[in-house]
Length: 276
Ligand SMILES: NC(=O)c1ccc[n+]([C@@H]2O[C@H](COP(=O)([O-])OP(=O)(O)OC[C@H]3O[C@@H](n4cnc5c(N)ncnc54)[C@H](O)[C@@H]3O)[C@@H](O)[C@H]2O)c1
Image (cartoon, rainbow, N blue to C red; front, top):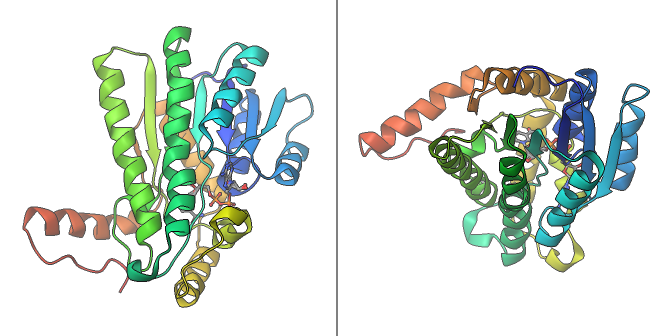
């Protein structure tokens, strides 16, 4: 998809980080925007950063709630009659050893990171198929979807799920001769609000991994020292959308660890720790 002028972008997690950067870039491309998040103050902040005259619909939407995402799609088509570029981007993170993870950790993170993307695909792709014009779906995974990082099993499982869901979706849409491209975004650490994802944990999933603290501290340090910005990630993503490129690996130095994992699997070697 080359010309984005007046096309419609739907962005989940638009109240912070990558989602906000996607919104700014899409607005600069002259797109009309649907911005969704559970954080309404964050959405208002994003809107305040957009150029005057940007046509925007904002909606409080919990992506873990299938009905809420259906409503997001209904409201998008009621207002704009189309969705050309869908960013299934909202996400959260937890940390800690696998054997002390809690069911609340799993339910919360898989609900947002994996089921949020599932809901986006279910609610928007059938409408995009009916629409019939060129569309693109960007699913935000992570390098955690291509690696197995100690202390991040819940997050890694959710992001590996997003990678394979995206690959399956790509194959299915190709087989159906649909004009819908798919990309999966796999960045390494970038300074955003992700290290403070606990701010988004619902009260009903309050039980957190009791041994999270040292792992959280490590993730926070890595996130804060990330060299690329959310704007850099958004630019790389938009280039991939325009080139109809599936994998978006924004941090080339991490490719060695991905290659090692692939080799470990093919050679049936003991897996190397990607973050020793
Ligand atoms: N920052 C990184 O280092 C990094 C690296 C790889 C992947 N990612 C992924 O990028 C995506 C965006 O995260 P970010 O880094 O911009 O973090 P962020 O915390 O700055 O933004 C995430 C946004 O998602 C929203 N959100 C959380 N739960 C939600 C829910 N249930 N429904 C709707 N919105 C919800 C938050 O309110 C927030 O506005 C996530 O999927 C994350 O896993 C981040």
